[in-house]
Image 1 (cartoon, helix red, strand yellow):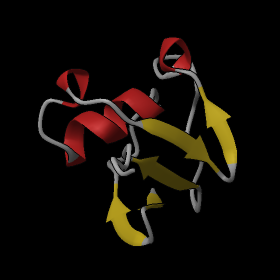
Image 2 (spheres, one colour):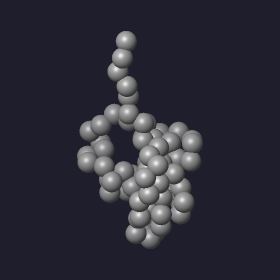
Image 3 (spheres, helix red, strand yellow):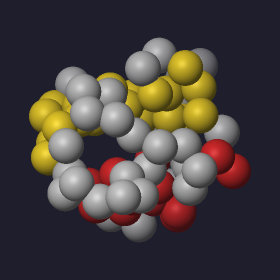
Length: 70
């Protein structure tokens, strides 16, 4: 299965349970310790839904980090 994370193409194995959580774990270092928001195909996904939100071929994930400023 092919997906995009922040515009970069990634290939996930065709697992039965390909979800947001597995994509983040495979492609980011310790996502549980970082603060960020996730959008799947432009729609916000809450952290509590990462394990239950399934991914499909061609999906696009955007991982948004907070920006500090004044």
